[in-house]
Length: 183
Ligand code: NI
Image 1 (cartoon, protein in one colour):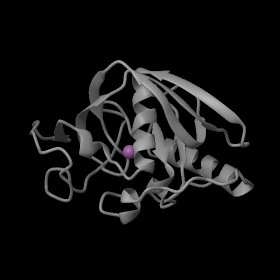
Image 2: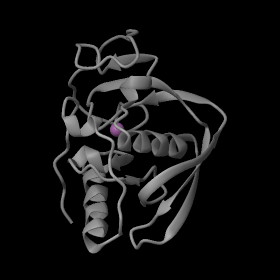
Image 3: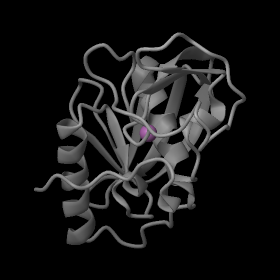
């Protein structure tokens, strides 16, 4: 396994629509393991392949119940509403409140190419939605109603603002003082 290099806001790969994985090969299985290791090394709770520069539909999530690897994840259903703070490993030091489904069902393939179905509530549901968004080039800053830079007071910014001072570059994710984690 290997810790991969993260891509940060401003890298075009984060805005691309990732392509479906045609076949779950050894390369894909290894990439998922490397993504898992990268997520743990960064103290994240989720990671999507575009965040390591790979525009393919792969995500890993671990909100404390063990790692889940998903190939070609699809949001099958969502219900309820939950508003909470999020961060992103690709947008360090910035957090914002994002409305998400409170409960989701996601289908996809596991690292061996077998169909799986994952149900999640709370942080798990949030992480799954955040990661799937990454595969469509969507960042949490596009959806956040307010953004906070670590160490600063809250300030409301236009949703979707990027590149500007408000949602610009940054420092890190999850862990310690941060609220919810990345993805
Ligand atoms: Ni993220």
